Length: 116
Length: 112
Picture 1 (tube, rainbow over the protein chains, first blue to last red):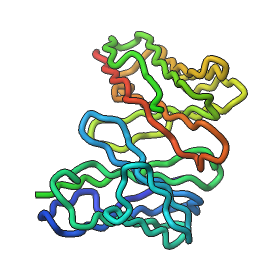
Picture 2: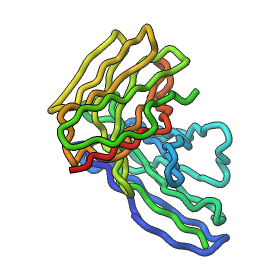
Picture 3: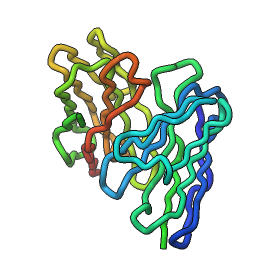
Picture 4: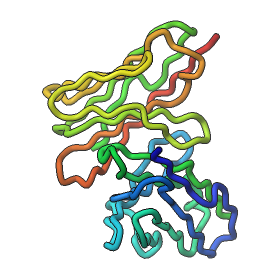
C-alpha cells in the first residue's frame, strides 16, 4: 500500500514553455502533498506543501507565480512550471502523507525536467 | 536549519557495519530516514518520534536522542543492496505540517 505515482517521468521542453507534472496517491487519500526539487548530487529541497482544496504554502525563495500548485482532490496534486528556463532543469519529486501512517511521507518516482 | 549528516561518504565491504549520524541545532519532533538510489526517488526506511525511540527492521535500525537533538542510523552486516545515499529528514515541531528539512545525505557504497 501507500503508492504514489508521478507523470511524466521525463520531460524535455524548450525554454519559455510550461510543463505540468502530476502526482497521484494510488491507494490512499493524501491529506497533504509535498513538492521537492533535487539538483544533481544535492539534497531534497522542499518547494511547497499543499492540502486538498486550499492554497499551497511555498517555502521562502520559491516563486509561487512560477511554480503553480493545484491540489484538486485527495489523490491528485499538480505542479506547473510556467515559462520554464534552463535553470529550472531538475528532478522534481512529490510525496504524500495519509493512509494508515499520517507521519510517513511516501515519495513518487520523480520527474526529470530538462529545459533546452 | 538543515540537519548535519556525518560522514559525507562511506565505503564498506559486504558484511561490515556502518553508522550514519544526523544532528540538528533545533529541537526535534521527529526524524525520518530515507535511502535514495541513483536516479530514483527516496524510499522510506523509518520514522522516529519525540520521546526517544529506537526502531529497526531487518539489519537496519535507528535511534533518536531527543535531548542531544540527534539521530543515528545503524546498518549491520551490510549487503550490496544497501548502497545508496541516505538522507535524514527532520521535523521541528507539531504544527509544522509535517514539513521535513533534509540533510545533505551520506553516500554509502558497499563493495563485494
